[in-house]
Image (cartoon, rainbow, N blue to C red; front, side):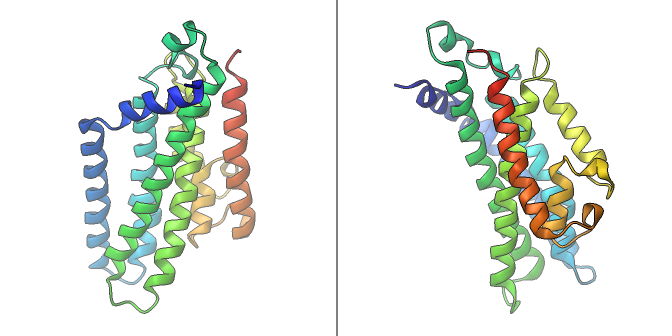
Length: 227
């Protein structure tokens, strides 16, 4: 079995444990309840739910939690040290784990986008099909971005403390509309959802920025691991 496949297999076992599944189910329930509460208010419930609780809180914290579990709360380099001692390729191991985290991030983001809009808008809204498609697509994109961002963060600090630093910086700086927001997913996700754009960027520019962020974080995280 290749190093990539070994990492996929072990990471899957770490993330498919009952306590992880229950935690994610509770997070999705929290997003659903928040969308229901927003629906009782004025127009724009779906937009507020997506930019607020669903993609602003549940998605990044959920990916932080998943990355922490997958890495066993350690630095990315030490996540599979037992396999590396037996000759497995460290970079392939990290790449396999990241591939699984990105898959989970895409799934979580897609599901959050779908249930949030469906709950906040109701099943009889005429524009619902388009909005479900759009919000699920942004959620998938956002989930992949956060998975790669937390993976890169895991390569810093003995215990992967860069994960928390990334979470906090994304929360504080990504909420602003200044130049400081440009490196963080939160700013571009809000733009793709039709909210305020950093430096008045177009949605296409934010989409390109998120795509670049994904590949840059992945490349840097793998590069930082010694062969």
